Amino acid sequence: MAARCKTAILISGSGTNLQAFINAVAGGSLDLDIAVVFSNNPDAFGLQRAEQAGISTACVQHGDFPDRDSFDRAVIAELDRFEPDLLILAGFMRILSASFVSHYAGKILNIHPALLPLYPGLNTHQRVLDAGDEWHGSTVHFVTEQLDAGPRILQGRLPIIPGESAEELEKRVQAVEHQIYPVAAGMVGSGKVSFKDGQSWVDGHPIVEPLIKSFK
Image 1: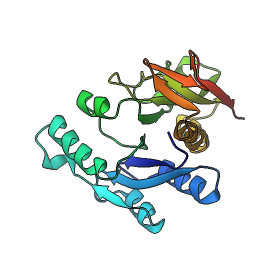
Image 2: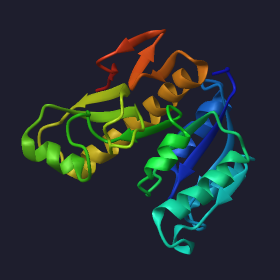
Image 3: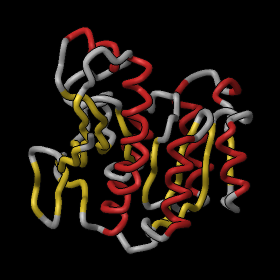
């Protein structure tokens, strides 16, 4: 992909990860063209964040459609008007259909609050604490049809502090997310990282393990 890769960011709520992208672009550390911020929720505060930053917005409400496939077709039609090279799921609270993933194959990124393949699904912070793990973090990965199972790109990991609550751990992990997600997206947008043959490739070579960035 070219350096100013056209990017769509999909949100459903407040858009804290979106704000991290907006800040990174404005600060010059991320070379992406955020072409549109899309939401399935017209009241999402993230849409206001986008408007304040001068970014185009779009909304299709899932409740207006009888099933997931018809909603996804409407979303595709809306997004394709902006011809995105890359889709960023930033708190988009909808499970994508196989046809949606296929339409944008290798172009969708998501971030999951765990060190995948550990702890796919929900309630990851409490599950990590209950298991007595020493490390936790977040994973940026390409989206495939299988939930939270696409090839990994970058993980931010941090040591668990003895005695901390799930809420305290969640805040620390969110701070990591805000740092690693724009970095990973920038690597995809510049062509350093790509999706090929069901794997993540870095500098033209497939990787089995994700890149790691450690935090305190």
